[in-house]
Amino acid sequence: MLGFFYTLFIKLLYFAFLTALTIEVASAQQASLQGIISDRSNSQPLFGANVILTSSTDESIRLGAAVEGDGFYRIGNITPGVWYLSISFVGYTTYQDTLSFRPGENKAVNAELSLDDTVLGELVVTRITGATRSIEGAQRITSAEIRRVPSPAAGDLSAYIQTLPGVVTTGDRGGQVFIRGGSPSENMVLIDGALIYQPTHIVGFFSPIPANVIAGADFYAGGFSPKYTGRISSVMDVQLRHGDRFNTMASASVSPFAAEFFAEGPIETGTSSWIFSARNSFIDRTST
Image (cartoon, rainbow, N blue to C red; front, side, top):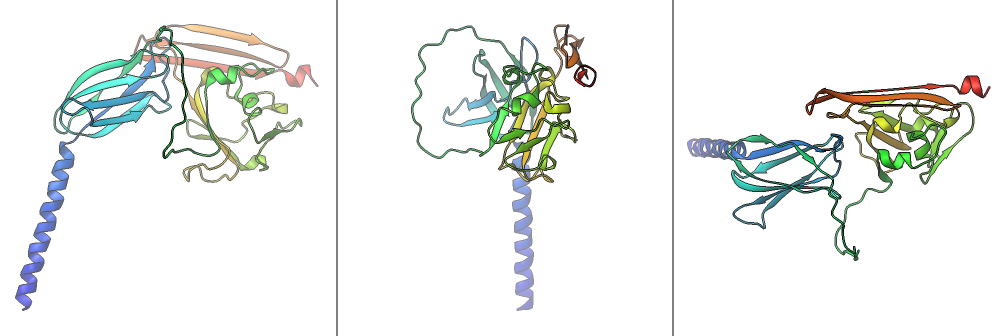
């Protein structure tokens, strides 16, 4: 009887090993696709662009991904074969290509989308029923939105967030920001993952984060994920942008409160770039 159970145990162990080996081999045969999607005119990442793969044998089989804040996307578990690639973003021409994947291949496709000057017709918005996913209190902020808010230091993130619901600032010399009743120490500000302890300047007019270096920012007035630990009131997750890989430009501005200088350009045209931004406050000398 003991020999019977021993033989059964060996067979089960052998079966489990073969099953795990089969799964590992099948997983290794799957291909993947990744790359960077950017704007052709200024080489900036196109956050939220759609990347879709459609099977050439069955158009109902589709794989997709949304472009992240740094322009990166990745699609995994692609069955080897021929797939149709489509990359689209509102206001830009669609990029299309046909890709052939070998077993286990990791293919990279980077694309630069051009602005589409096509005039659209009437847009009708209808109510859509069904399950939806939303994050309460979350908002995506772009540099274009920041520039629309008037402030002593033009195009500043600190001035923009003061226009959002639930945000209150004080006029003291600390420029404190209170969000949803929480204290300033309960707000988290990150720049490319680095924690910033003094995100606003004196009297709250401006911050060390001008709009011309921002690719985008995710503002959470609540409901943020566990990866943002250490704060309980709000999170401002800022992503800095890359310099222009094709054109060199510079700008400067001076006001009674601050002076700033900005410049960017290519290191190797179309491949790498540099960006420089500096800002200095005059408020301690002009508004004592």
